[in-house]
Length: 445
Ligand SMILES: Cc1cc2nc3c(=O)[nH]c(=O)nc-3n(C[C@H](O)[C@H](O)[C@H](O)COP(=O)(O)OP(=O)(O)OC[C@H]3O[C@@H](n4cnc5c(N)ncnc54)[C@H](O)[C@@H]3O)c2cc1C
Figure 1 (cartoon, protein in one colour):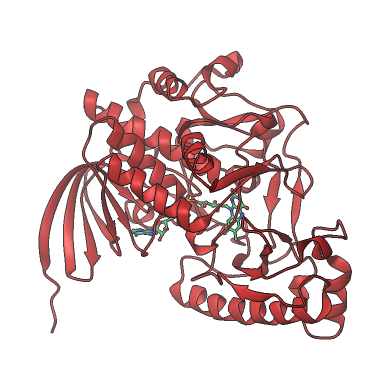
Figure 2: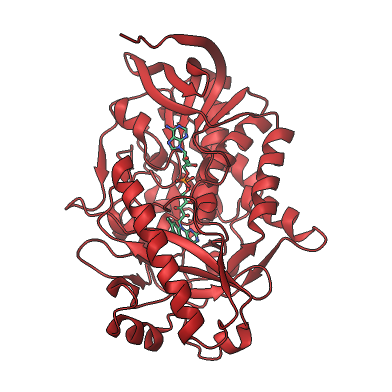
């Protein structure tokens, strides 16, 4: 019988699991404070969903048209300052969404990795965290693997930015998978069409191309779930980003389900590309590029934190005393098993809410935080907070908090939130404590 052997053991101050937008910012923020940071990323690239759906705009970065600031702003400015510019801001074509940032995907992921290198983060690509070893209320070590075999990491603080929260769940953090019935938002395979005559393609202002889609479905050439073809101009001239092929009923934590959805999604993308070429003006000479390397998963586990953000908090425009990022994104719900797409406004026009730091804290485990799309939120709040800018900002807050815990040798539940918020504000994160709703100053510690 083969018995797996632990090949090596490593120590680190902060272990960040997952190099998506949340993990990138968590690792960067912590390392810049001078602590030792190891970032494990299971795939071959940083970015997470951003890398799995290349070219997807950063949405939600400008609540009420003011940038959220912090690491998102720094990255954007760095890309904008390049020659030629590798990012720009534009208006989103959908109702209720604020402006979005479009960027060159390859330059953006390269730059993110460079920023991690500059900060001294030890990045391990192709490395997966497998199993936490617990001692009372702390994660003592994690068994991980890369192509050389198993290894153990002994961290002081763990920040789970894995999107799915496998490690937090194994460590005993309660969670909700999808909505109250277990339905998760659809997963998506994206692609670009290159060589498009964009003036002709976008002559009709309908961003969903519904009249064309209806014809394709009626003729049996497009899957019925393609009734709304969400097409938008890509970063590079003559390219169109297709965020249209959604597969329902997929459990993003089940590798077999994800494999099936990936292949089925690619098939539907190919059909859609052929349809665009033959039926939609402007696409006559276009061809498919940048097909997703795997499915983009919107929603799996929502972990239970010290606080659970609710749709009611959003509707009231709540500005928490421990708020770490502003947001005004609509409730962007995409094709659960029993419903279609919606992006209804989450709150009154002209207002915004903030995401409280307590949504990143487990109730029991003293050296674990989570950031990004696994935060503690109800399904309605989740559908609004999940944009990449907000995930980056959550990561930034968790990274700073990890340093505060190490410096004071305290559990994560005792992070002084006033200090955290003050540091984030000093780092350029906009609209935090000064906008906090005084009625909601009673915090859980
Ligand atoms: C199809 C789609 C369209 C979207 N459209 C937009 C949009 O237009 N604009 C916008 O702003 N947002 C959009 N979103 C939302 C946004 O992309 C995500 O919510 C956000 O990227 C999540 O970031 P994250 O860092 O929390 O997680 P992820 O991006 O999921 O990153 C998690 C990372 O962790 C890694 N990982 C997982 N488990 C482990 C492990 N055990 N060990 C090591 N690594 C691990 C994964 O490989 C991955 O790289 C969209 C999402 C999807 C799926």
